[in-house]
Length: 146
Image (cartoon, rainbow, N blue to C red; front, side):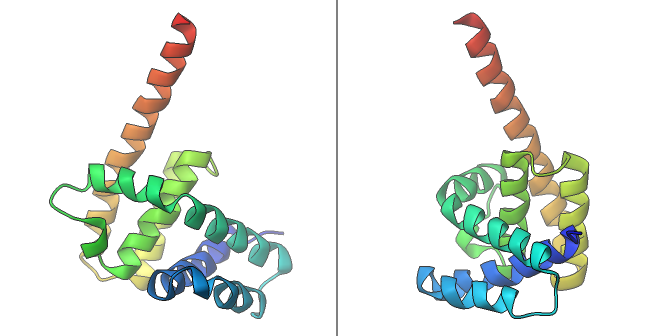
């Protein structure tokens, strides 16, 4: 049984590590998640989140930058930035329902981020989720026209 919240927690830790070390830290980040006491399928899901999020980092950061007025992604707190990245990856891939993704991001923020981060993360995620939905609707409409 996959423990999805634990997977997200492990992925957050791995992405924070990669954020500091860069791509050279990938092996260490993945070793960390597989060396724990978590179930293999939970660690495998965390690895998928890390690899997939990292592979789409520029796309995700571009979306975040467009929705977080007056906040450059590089200026966001390390933990806030990576909670947002995981959540945006999940929104882009329909990894879970929107409500679950935002709730899980808020749960991670409560565990790892500063107290004032919750409102910021919630606002940015809500705006980003709406943007992704609009973009998907625009694509669908364009396909129907063609």
